[in-house]
Image 1 (cartoon, rainbow, N blue to C red):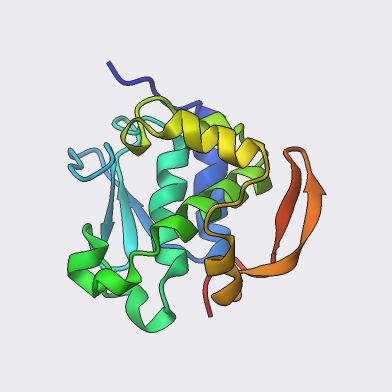
Image 2 (spheres, helix red, strand yellow; image 1 turned 30 degrees about the vertical axis):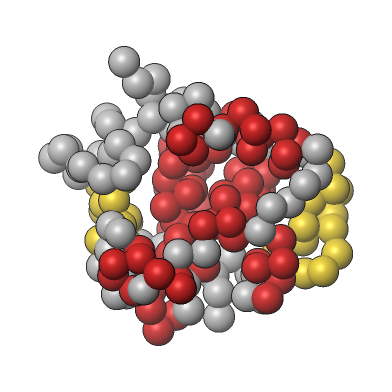
Length: 167
C-alpha cells in the first residue's frame, strides 16, 4: 500500500508551484498516469492528494513543465514525448530540477527518490545526488535555469538556480 506524503511537504510543494507559476488543479477523482495521483494536462498538473505517494512526484512532473520552452508548455500532456515531441522530454534535467526544488523547500531528498519511484533506480540516484554528481546539470545550464556556479545549502554545494521556469 502506498505511503501518503507528509501533509506539510504536500502543502509546501503546492505553495511553491503557485509561486513559480505552474498551474494545478486538485481533484478527488482518480488520476491515472505514470505517477499515482498526478498527471500533466494541458500544461498544468491534475492532482489527487489522496493518491500521491510523495511530494517529490509532484516536483518531478512540475519539472517536466518547467524545463519546456514556454511555447510548448501549454501543449504538454501526460506523455511529454507524445504531446510535445521526444526532443522535449529532458528527463535528466527534470530529475535535477526536482532535486533543486526539494532543496529549496528543505524537503529530504528521500522525498524525491522514494523506494517506489524511478524504476528501481531511486537509491542509486539518491547516492549520486548526495555525493554531488548533478546528473542533468549541463542541460539546466543550457536552458538558463541554473548558473555555472554553486551555492552551499543543507544538502551541500548545489547548483545555483537562476529561475524556476525556462524562459
